[in-house]
Structures are given as structure tokens and as C-alpha cells.
Image 1 (cartoon, rainbow, N blue to C red):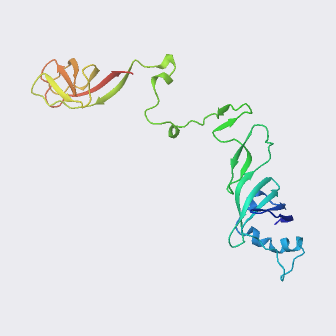
Image 2 (cartoon, one colour):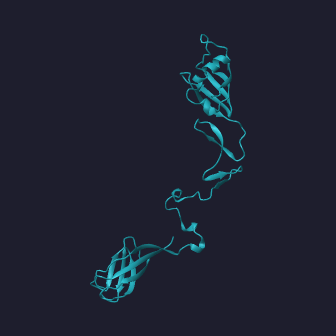
Amino acid sequence: MAGITFIRRDQNDESNIVRIVAENTLAEVGTAGYLLAQADNIAALNHASDADPFEWQDSDLALISCSNGHGFFEISADREDFVILTGLVSTTLTNGHIFVGNAGNVATDVAMSGDATIANTGAVTIANNAITTAKILNANVTLAKLAAGITPSHVIKFAGQPTTAGGAPAEVIAVPGALNTDLAFVQMVDNGTNNTTVLQAAVTADTLTVTFSADPGADAIINYQIIRAAA
């Protein structure tokens, strides 16, 4: 691992600034055990021995110049780690890139990618095919999002294929949710033993009433579709 190449303490009345130059990145300096691993290196830079080691003070703040920027760090109580206070990075930034906090909590120069990209004007462009069903909030695909040529006037709201019960020319079919403003289409699938035809279909609240040419008996089968004005 690259290491510390310079260290000097500026004595003050309160907080002491320890100026450090490291060949590492800010994230590497902030990893657990980094300061402990650099103990021998720090001692050598200060010509210290085991009998006279470099001693960290509780008031020390480390200003570290790293390979990818600068940062202020505290010293952990066990003297084994640098704990970042404020990440200070270069004021330069690659054209079209953004600063993003990395795993070491350090602002890092990266290109925006994935579902969107960003221009140096700040304009964001959504990538082709990035908007999938899972990314659309439920009940938020409206008619306004459809091209005028394919916008429907009505949509199928209910459908079914019941068998008649017989006993009268009119059959009442329960369709919970149907409105009296809905429209119905009814088709004979099997006219049964009574050989009847469909004469009329009317929708009222929660109900579809189908009138046959005669009692359809208990074996006629119809298809129905109930449509509703699109909104």
C-alpha cells in the first residue's frame, strides 16, 4: 500500500493541525486501521524511536493531501484510524461529470450513467428504453399520453359468458360496478334448445338485462362486453 510521505504538526492554542501528504486516495486514508498501519512510516519521517514515538494529541486535526484531493480528519481514540470530517476536493471537475459520495464518504468525480445522462449545461437526458413498467407509478398512464390517432373513445370494462337460467324472455345478469351510462354488446354463442335470438341489451347500475326473442331456456350461452367512455 502507498503511504504517508510527509507529516508536520502546527502547534496552536487549541486544535493542532497535522499536515500530511499521502500517496493514497481519500477513501484509502479513511479505511479502518490505516493510521495504525502507517505508524512505522510516521516514526521514520519524524526520526522517532520506540522510546520516543510520534504522539498524537486529542486536539489534533489532520489535513491530508491525497492523490485525489484533500480532506480534514480527526484521529480515533485508539489512534488507529483517520475519521473524515469534511471532504475537500479539487475545484476542477471533468466536463459533464458530477461529484458523488463514494463508499468512503468522499465526493468523487464520476460520469452520470444508467437510466440518465447529464450535459455540462445541467440538462438531464433519459436513456432509451429506460422507462419500464416497474418505474411508472400505478394509475398514472393516462389518455393524454396516447397519440391522438389511437386514443379510444370507449374501453371494455366488463366481459363474461353466462348460461341462461330460463323462465322468462328477459335475463338479468349481475355485473357489479356497471353504470347506467355504460354500453353493452351481446352475442349469442349457443341458442340452446329453444332456438332464441338476442333482441335487446340494457345496462343499469350493477346489472345487464338481456331480452331474447322468447324464453331462452336453461342452456343458451351468450357473450357480453360492457364498454365505458374513456376518461
